[in-house]
Amino acid sequence: MNINLTLFAQALTFFAFIWFTVKVVWPYMLRAIEARQKTIADGLAAADQGRKSLELSTRQADDAIRAARERAAEVVAQAERRAVQMVEEARAAAKDEGAREKAAAKAEIEQAVSRAREQLREHVATLAVAGAEKILRREVDARAHAELLDGIKKQL
Image (cartoon, rainbow, N blue to C red; front, top):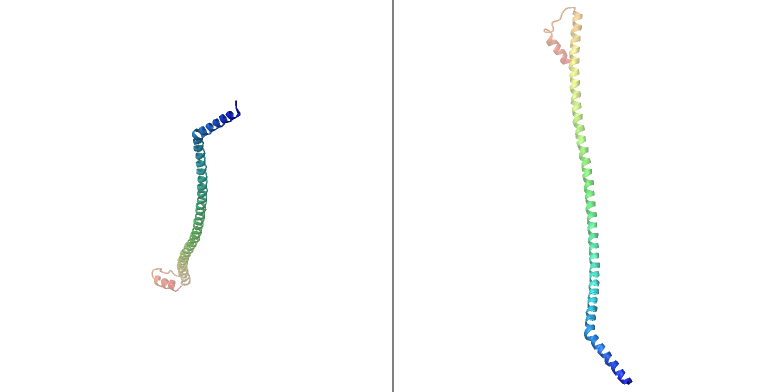
């Protein structure tokens, strides 16, 4: 065998292997490589989209927290204003109630003083009649002297 023939046979076998690889194996490998590249590109795009979505969600969450804090501060301020208003209303109501009780007590005192004066007048009139009876040593007709006693009562 000749070295040239061996070399030629090996070259022919190598070219046949290359032709077979290019026609049969290579398209499947290219499709697999392209599918893998597409998968990687889709994954990178999804990761980028996820990062952007995370940033957007973070901003929205921060805005929502800020708005909630502002609303909470507003509610607290409103509650404080309402508490002050309720205290003022209670204070005014207590003041009005105190004034009413004071007026009622004054009226009651005036009535008690008036009753006491009336009782005192009657008592003084009775004592005056009893004293006059003793002085005169005779019986006094109460009906006959009623006008006199009424005049004395009014003077006292």
